Image (cartoon, rainbow, N blue to C red; front, top):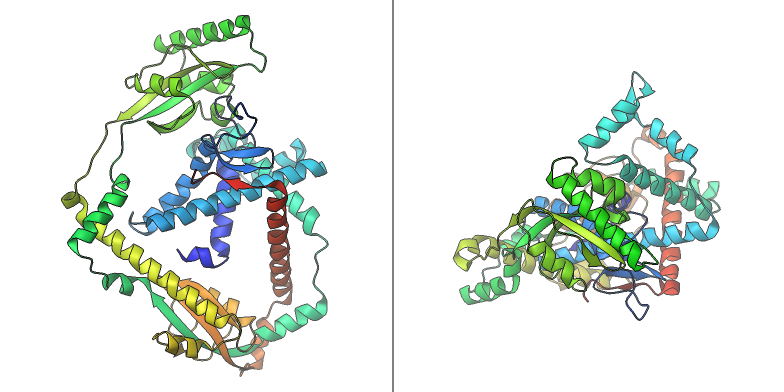
Length: 488
């Protein structure tokens, strides 16, 4: 919820890492990219980025692990608004990555095989007795269910992104005077007024009427119900210029693959890795994951074929786009329909969290509005019937007394001036707003020796570079006409 209101560095890093792992540089869905009008198909693509796009398949692969972390942190009771916000963040990060890839291509920035090998061979995970060991390398990837191609593609993309950032931002500098001044800010003790907004406390106060809870259940029951679904793999063979002879050959080849799997001579996964022409699933042995009715709105034959198969069965070759395809059903799940009494406790908890989240969001928005033009946090809190408290003296090197896990927040506040405010900042289940109310030189001058000017210089540089990069990406989005199809 509150991630909508701030630049959360931790989530930013996580999302960039997830994209590097889960997003392929080639976006392809069963040979279909454009509609007959030449526009990106909103049924296939989650976003348009210039003349290219991000497929819903790749978006789902990147988004799912982030949502799973959200569910795990909240015992599965994430609100629709929280889920939507995570989806938007993941897609925005993927769009940023796509823009950087396109920029690198325009500038001719590449990562050589030698550069890639050097980075991989220096990673400690793959070393044995201090030296790179290929067997260890392969085993580690297998343990994490990653193919060599998949991992090396992600590493190449990460290196490419690093090189491009270096090229774009190397000329963004800070002066020594700026660093010295920044260090002076950290050579102080501070006091701050603060307001905390407690999600758990607000949630406990939400006691809906039974009919309202039932109405809410009807709105979200799809979270508890699921239609029949099947877990599938596929092998696709196609051509950009398919003649009758080419298509016939593809069909016969796929029939042969099917016979090999059915006779036990080969595995479907191995054949897909070797021969499938769908880059988005090839390295995963053709794995497409769980599909439901309606997944393939523009490929009804594919969907009908999948749902006509039993667990373990392989389809006969069928025409798909400009080629032929075969699919294997690995697993099936029957449709499940819940009833209100069965899931009432979960519905209530989610309703309470959603209502509490909306209240915190509303209060945070009001506080920011009151503070943005130099207002007083204590006055704003009084006007809104909130409780404002005051910290004891603190500095950027330790927790704020009485606020567990606040060391990062203290460091962030240490670079602030009098009356500067920060928020919302998450500490546990609470959201905090702080405003600096007093400052003094540290009582113990010896503690100044602990200030690492080199680290502060790097921090100041990072802040300036991230600000520049954010502006660059926003400008590119406008130039490329980026469009989201998430709600299409």
